Length: 103
Picture 1 (tube, one colour):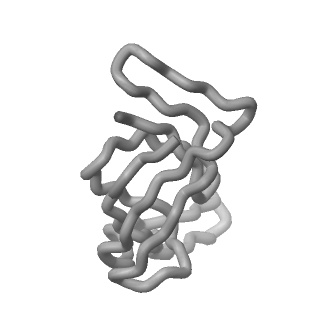
Picture 2 (tube, one colour):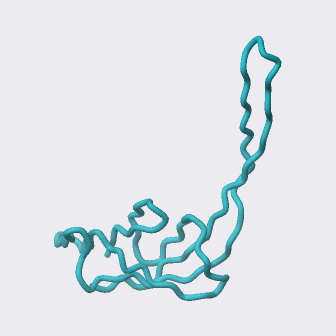
Picture 3 (spheres, one colour):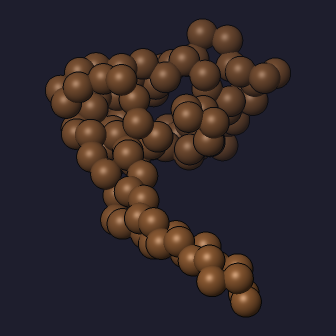
């Protein structure tokens, strides 16, 4: 069984047992969370689509860890003006393991 969930302004296609990286959530490692914004549930040949969400559907998950992604460099530059700025950024994330998908 698979589901399409919404969290952090993004959509994720998940199945039971999957591990995904989502935008940072305010939960600690080991906490159980429930995603209740389920856009679609796919069970073999049968698919249920919501308008906009499937009523009564939820996805149970558990938080594995919170962390930061790889560092990326941001470089701003204006030609002939002597202006340049170098800056680094590490995007925070939450690693989540999907448990049960229920309709």
